[in-house]
Image (cartoon, rainbow, N blue to C red; front, side, top):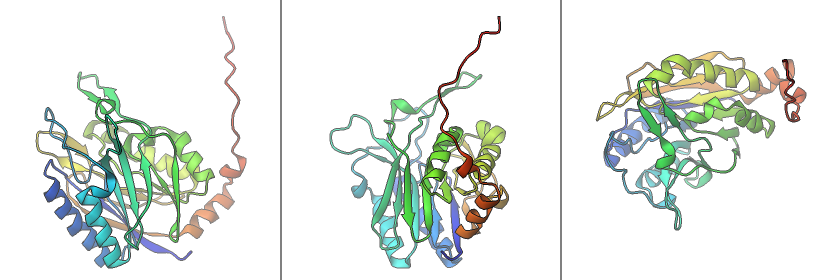
Length: 280
């Protein structure tokens, strides 16, 4: 596979779905104009709820206007687009999935991934996030085999669970995607370190588009969208507050080279249960 340009789109999404779709279309078009062949949007790209308000109605994935808009753009420009996440409610579900959607250059949906790890956290300040009250967790990791390489799909809080990324790397993923809406507090402490660690320990590229700045209602996200190489080198980084596009060259052969130098995937062992020894 030949090297190509990938883009991470940073957004400050609101609770106005139409406005968010329009902003995403503008930024995706900018990425296309820069030559990107793989363009990744952040988590909650088309809807970011205000604190204390009801969730926007959700429905089937293919009926989502944001999915339809990105399908049209992907087909028009012949590029791959990752929608970081939408709320997708299929059939008689009580709650939706938080779902990443990978769209092929044909405009067809190539893969979907439903977020495995839901963000249920209470900070020392007493502020609580309870994603499980608004969404249902997915059940399986997903790697998409594409002409651009094997792309592992994940969302935001997943980044704290390294076994997921090791499983995707063992399944062939050279590119790990982490669309996110990291809070400012956790982002300042952990965002960069976690992403670099996932790249290094798996010899993989990491593409992490994020939400940024202050959203209507006062919620703050960390920004600093990143593209990281398989040696752990930061190839491109956005700032904390500005929507925009960052790009970097992806070379699947580089990931293979790093994995040959440090064959951690070959050396990987599935561990038996831990034996706890009493030291009394």
